[in-house]
Image 1 (cartoon, helix red, strand yellow):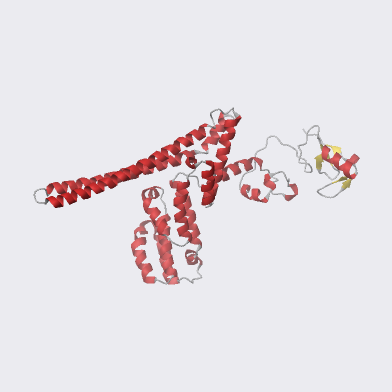
Image 2: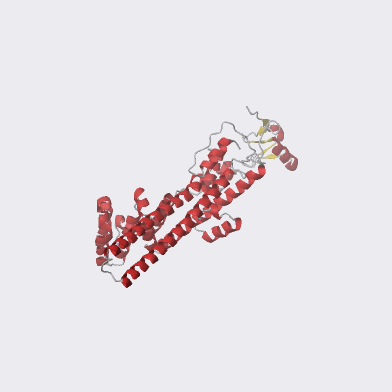
Length: 391
């Protein structure tokens, strides 16, 4: 594999390296913010205590100091936890760099390349399992292969709670997630929290809780009126039309499908916040390979080849949106044997215009005494066939 090919391969792993960096950054900023907040509170209380030094009793001073000590001890434990988390992310980052270095170091040694390829394929499969919510299988496989530092299981497990909540028509975990990531969601102009609030309002409408719905809108929707006034007005109109309306515009708002839309939006934005690609690397890798194989005849049942992946229905669906590959050199493949036709196994043309390889037709004559076109059922004598020349 050339250095150019390796470089292109490693470029696909951008999120593989960026995820632990983002997690490290998030932990550091969180601990820094917590440290500043707690230290300001402690210093404020010390200042207040100092102001009261002439009037405060000894017992009250001791109680205040004891409370401050408890608070500082709690802060210390919090900082130790943050340090452990930072060390974990640094360890993950080192492991991932070492893994990717196997693609460039000792690239001429087959054993190193095979080890890298095997680990990479296992990673891609586990990532796909996590994205498809096969959490237990993914965790078992990760532990079995000792790939914990190379897999972002924690991100998927934390999102699991939100997804499960939304699937049960419960927004509690989703709103907690929005609160934890408020600043980042604001940077990407996320509408997820607003859509969650709209959904909770709609659920009250569907339960005929009109007063509760109006109060909920005043509390949670009015703050979005400057940016989402049209959506709010449309949601408020469901109070008039009711849950059994046949008006398409409002029926869509009341449809349970909106919960699935919320799940999909959450997954997309959660991946974005953690610098994960919205599509699995398995999909990307497979489609990259399939695009090389795709021709203008793909999907034509009359031209199907049992040895071609794209002639299989499942693979064809995955490649349906891909462009046709540019082929500067063509190879003729016999539809009977699947062998490539060349100067030794040259193509032969039947009187009806169909072409097959010489070896396949000779073998057919020896077995059947005649030539039968497998596509049309037409019968011919061998001496009726003509050789075709590849230019």
